[in-house]
Length: 351
Image 1 (cartoon, rainbow, N blue to C red):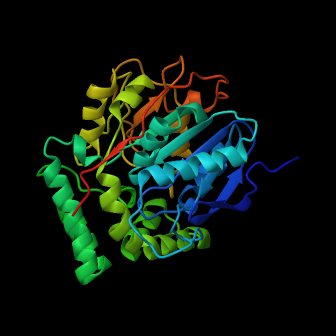
Image 2 (tube, helix red, strand yellow):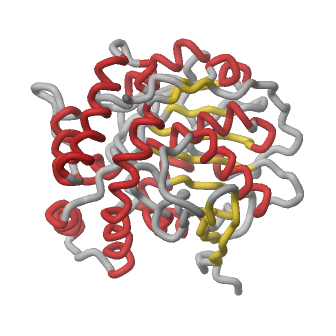
């Protein structure tokens, strides 16, 4: 019997970089994009859990870990990363079948760009808490925060940048502070103390594979803080294209930077179809619970948040509304309508 959780690795040459990718399972293609400074390793456990119904592809974004750039590191573009995704889909789905796409935090912005630019290659898209500052009530404050984080990194190093980020994203009075899992979703690689906290919560130590993933995340932080954070958070979604692609947003359970853009984008792009509660998915240490969140069908009405399940701004095009769940257990429909859309605007970049 074939081991569906066995990992097949490969390298894909794209414009200006070589992408390391990993594939598990059998069935319709699901591409899971890491956010922040994470790479493919952050999804190891959840990908194995979903491999019973899906061909799950994970990868290291260009400039991270095992995906070197052809030249020096420069500011990254969501549009370029979206084109990388389509190249990966073309490689793994050579018959032209569309793929499902999941992105969290900064990679959720890539998911929006991919849907606007390449709707015909995607069957359904889940964009989890994209930090789109242009859609905040006070976008200048968001831009200033992330510009300050980048400047702190350039002037004083990663630790100072992380402190600036933590202070700027600190919970309001009376709100619970984010745990290490939440920090990872914001692009913050867990510190040794946070990793120990995760382990204590599970009553087990991180295995060598998890420890290696966290070391790579730490090594990727300078690239994320200096060359990804500002251009990605400054991305302005093509709301016309997203509305044409039948956007159906959800929202998170905690106030904070990611949630307001999801709600505001939803009001502009289309009607909501239920609510998704929870924080950043338990990608590293609660994989089964997180994967169950991807399997659960969408609610027809608001419901109580479920601890450990991700908050979602979910997008899809086709005839059926998108949920995080059963839709990711059913094969993607062939012949999904192509949606004409222009390339997304760029702007609001930190200066």
